[in-house]
Length: 119
Image 1 (cartoon, helix red, strand yellow):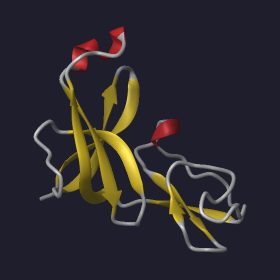
Image 2: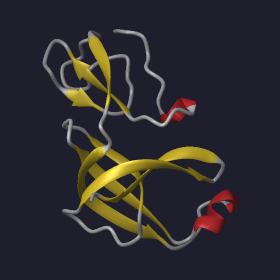
Image 3: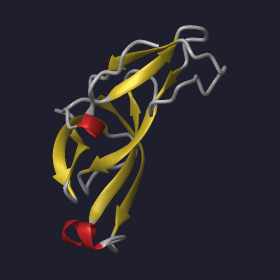
Image 4: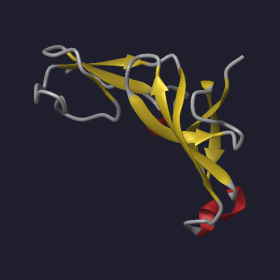
């Protein structure tokens, strides 16, 4: 496995995914092994931040005091162009099938990926 690339979990404005050298599976989030075949031979790549909305769920009740200021907020599943699916935040008007692009914003004190309709 190559060295880690900084991403949003480390404060960088980037989304990182892994590719298995043994079976070519793509996965998000980081693991020490391939979820498809178990190989530990993984490489990391930076995603373009583009994809398609797979699912969306508008959160209308704060889960924590830190998220209260953000209600309502949208939790989405994005099928990334690179072939993995990820959960993220997005504009409240996103719908299944929309083409989206990532930007990064603060949410409850942390930098997070935030998706908007692609232009």
